[in-house]
Length: 167
Image 1 (tube, rainbow, N blue to C red):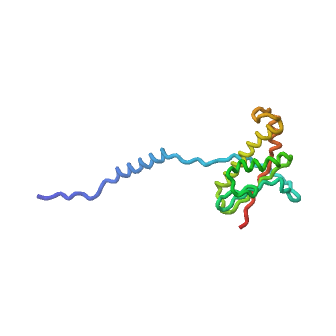
Image 2 (image 1 turned 30 degrees about the horizontal axis):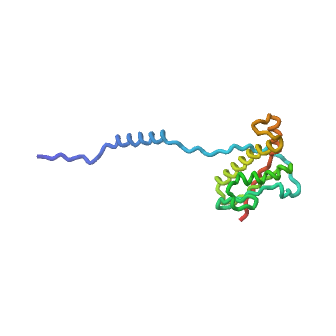
């Protein structure tokens, strides 16, 4: 009796179909993380040049080192950056001066740390709106009419300046 030789090849067509079905399945069900966005309005271009030194009492210094450690106004241990920025803004705004927030970053600073400090600055601005509306108009910010809100926004205007730390 002759024995039949078994074939050692497999039909790979079905395996390819299953692989493509799995690939399509995972492409359909996978969700991608959305990027964190911070809405910012850039100021209009101006040819105005500031002559002379800027008074130090108008500047709030924010420094971020290469380890992403934050220092605000020479205060190294910052637990709440929003609170520190708000505390720095109050005396400047109460003296009717336009504040300048100077962000100094080390070249090794992570972009995420920069985005977080911008978010803290934005939150400090929101808190200062409420503070100024109570201080100047003795009203809650949400109770102000549009003219009063514009007045608060005009008083709250400040400049953000960036500088790279030299190592």
